[in-house]
Image 1 (cartoon, rainbow, N blue to C red):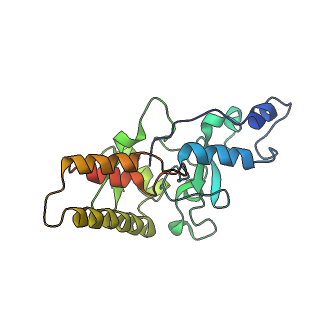
Image 2 (image 1 turned 90 degrees about the vertical axis):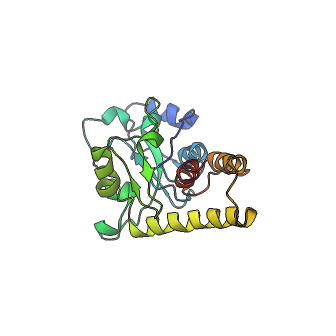
Length: 211
């Protein structure tokens, strides 16, 4: 999970929200909204950090859309995120992110301007995600299923690629602090296409422990 800095909402969403009887389900077209969410998230999932596109993403309501106690947040841009489809349609134990979360509520909002989600999340070298906060840890595992085996394997593959690159750069030597810092900066920032690398926060966490 990587912190999301919310930008300006699409004008069409603002205009639609001001119409009488406006609801999320009747809001059309959603393409400008999808594009806006993808741009601010660097085309990665708000929860697992997989690569997203307009065709593979889902619009996630952090505060669930289906619950009647949040009707005012249905079309609130601050409540909307881009999530992967998380194996939607598969058995629940194979789902993750938005499909697995469904109408449940979770503590940690990656777009919370007052609480940086990155400070609550840790990773093990084998690719597992966890938190020292027991509530958040349970939500990462149970509500979002972020230790789903495919995601853990993908994180291991990414970090192996990075470590192999570092070892080629410094064969038989200790990685220099300067080079590690440059590599961390590379993973912290979007590339020329405006995208973050997949699973970027795991790599940042792993390398930061070695600076």
